[in-house]
Every structure is written in C-alpha cells, then in structure tokens.
Image 1 (tube, rainbow, N blue to C red):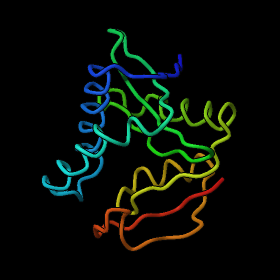
Image 2: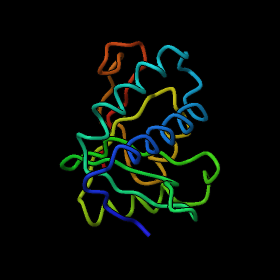
Image 3: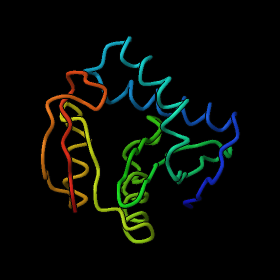
Length: 145
C-alpha cells in the first residue's frame, strides 16, 4: 500500500536516508565514496524535506521503497536492495502518474538499470546534461512521458 508521508519525523528521515544509501550503493556503482557522502548529506538535510514523499512500508513498518515528487516531476525513487525486482518501483510510478500527474524524471545516464526501468515505464529522453546539478561529471538524462 502506498502512503503519503506528509511530515517525516527525524527517525523517519534517518530511515529514508539509510534506504537511499543502500539503494545507491547497489545501483550507482559509478559513484566514488566521497560522492556518496556528499549526496547523503544533501538528501538527508535538503532533498527529502523539499518533496512530497510517498512510501511503501515493509513488514516491520519500516520503508521498502519511497518516491519524492514536486509538481509533475519525480525527484527521486529508491527501492531497498532486498526487495528490488518485486514491482515496488513500478507500483510507485503507476500510482504517481495517475494520482499526482508526474510526467518528468531525471536519471543518471550511468545508472543503466534505472534508464531501462524508466524506458519500460514509458519515459523517453527529452534532453541531456553533461554534468549533474552539483556540477559533478555524472551526465543527467531528462525524461518525459
């Protein structure tokens, strides 16, 4: 079941940040450890609090997957490594397309699994930036439905 998490408590922000990090370590093999630490602080202190959060909980009432949305943009989508391939990302995307009207997402070009996932969900490349928003050498694909 998908739940909107309107105002995450500090322990929930910690849990979401931990899920983010485990997911990134499993999928973003192109990042170096210093980059992960840089982005981790940004995610915990800024990004998670700047979006509408939607979560899928695990059996222990923790988080199995989450998405962050702003306007018609999917700002983030992360799935715990232990439940990857079980359809949680698909479930979040389908829900957010219908109920939140998402039409855009940015993805690291080097995260080929995510690029393929979004393509299967119907997203197409609209443009590309050679650097990420932080100016780091990780090309970003801008996708639209």
